[in-house]
Length: 90
Length: 482
Image (cartoon, rainbow over all chains, first blue to last red; front, side, top):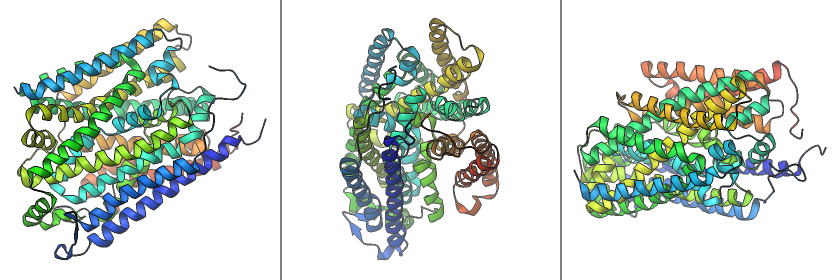
């Protein structure tokens, strides 16, 4: 029996990436929303008609995360087989 | 009756039936009924997987309740809704490959199968089955109410007849088709949701005279609508942030979502699903909730939140297009209900009946019972939904929060922490559910404890319970390789 399945190493790394990405997502979302949004409404600036805090937090934030997910999956995630090698197939 | 709206919707429903029928024929020729009926034989590709997760998750709360609340609360609620983008990637990355590998090794078909194999404990299985049955039952009721309200506002039928119509359409095809039917129709429904929300958003922006115009109207009415703090200024940063747990990362613990993370064919389809899922969730959530906010200056004074989307669609779109677009929330509700039905019936048939009541049951009996239980459940929910409680979204979130508090740690730590054992799992579930229910009533009475959503503390406490009991009682490292 091999002590640690080699696929688990990959799986663990990818799960950690997921946690990191979620943390980053949260900071971005929170930072723009409450960093810019807590100013009085009269001082708001607008991008494409939307309040700037909302635009950067939710619209740009979503796009950034989407691009990051694509990059991470394409370049850092490894394809592994899910079935047990040699062992019985269902 | 508005036939121009109804005909496209009915055609959509027929298409869905057709898919259900088609996959039931595939089911008839299958050699492994259980795995096929409840899991679609672990062969979902990337697109279908992503869509089935989005469609299952994007329920009545995101299509009717959510935009309805955004209508009253303004941009603050859209900000809150965007916490759901994280589910698009988080669930698949966290459960990810290890869950897929372990589920295959355990031959697990449901989340409870996984827990059973991991913890080897009857108490864990029965406790999980019980919480799934209770909590998802109330989640289903919320969805059925949403579906019936939608049909009601479109057709002018009475609520009861609308509910009956909805119940029959759902039951027929879940009962015949099983998981594959649900997953396939989810893919169609997900696509409908995506396109539908895009069309509606554009129409609403046009009707309001452009975004700057709409935002100006909102400021004129009440400047708070464009702040992150809600119309009354009572959405605190802490409260909104706590939704990261409820509708963001906590979703990992939802059985109807987790089961999808064991159903994919290979890592390539998982990778595709990650990307598609994130994009689709983000676009749908952003669109739907913006529609809710933008609808306010166009159609002021709607008091039942659930009706905002149907009414604004009828207002801004030509009737036939409104019919197609409104198929989107219909799709969302139906696909959620279908998968909830399947999860609950699989808990009863597979996790309880086959495990403990009659393990040696024959295939024919299993088939008959699976169909029967699914149908019975549907009828039960129907009866419950006949006299519906008022606030759809909160009933729904109640169920989600309870399940998350119960399952998140037994699943996640069971997967990654070798010291986790059955005592930890049992303690974690009891703590999670117990504190969730208690806190729910406390918060209702005295306002949210420390200003965060009810789900926050139970999730933290169940983590503490899991770790403490795993280390204190029967401490033993789990061997993942065995």
